[in-house]
Image (cartoon, rainbow, N blue to C red; front, side):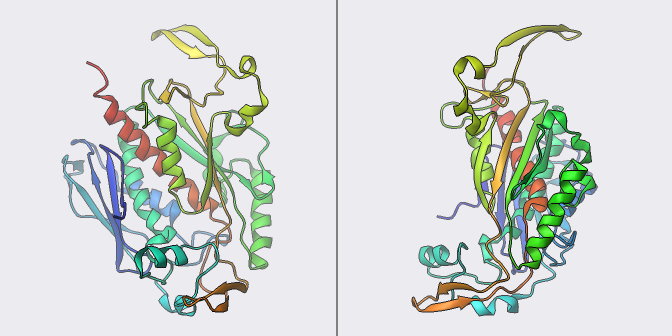
Length: 363
């Protein structure tokens, strides 16, 4: 059975294909009385939509969301929130050449083998266009998290070999949206853009890393043993198209340290809100024992190069005959700038769900 839902209490279910009539979804579990800022939700979709710059796909979609239920007089009713996003700029003929062929590193072969049928137009359900629905769900989750003073900021930290040499604490993340690549440091952003342009001219693609920081997370989010907070975040990120890796806190670099060097020592800090227990360092990435400890949560998400390239590639057709797949259509030379709001949205869905689940943890 296909899994089209994400979350336990705050749950998003999506439907639709890249070249179908529309995409859409249902958000369940959102508490009643939440103010819904439609302009904010639409602005989040604008951050993900295609055609927003010369380093993204030139497919033109306005991605206008229409809400069908669950909202009355600007507030959530506590019932299912239904929405649709119409597809208005499909060019299905761009994919007729791969009707019977399998594109390298795409879901063509696996979908055909699993279901015995596949929608070859833009990849159908496997297309990253489905993530537009995640943006809507994530935007509603962000509005919910705002009540708890939880904020989420993602940014591009690496494209190919070009990477930021500063941690998020040394960057002004408010500058992220000032660049079309969504890197908060101007000089590095310009290098990334120039590199992507050169890759695009070669008819090729490139990957990189989106980093994300969550601030204001209360202590106690996460459900041991199998629903640890970092495990839920990992599942959320690895479920995004083209994602190949996830690490939080010190991540893979942890292997280079001794326990005495990596452990986060606890300290007591006195302030206007009384005594707070904090940590001197944050190698744990805001999560210990699978539960948030109140420090910043930070993580990295690795994206592979987009599989569709504007070059000829060797492959086979559905009968196993050798064939050449020719690059056609409108595709991103680098998915990273449009992936930034998707990473934020999936993080928001996880945290909103964790907050609601945590209400049942104690009296």
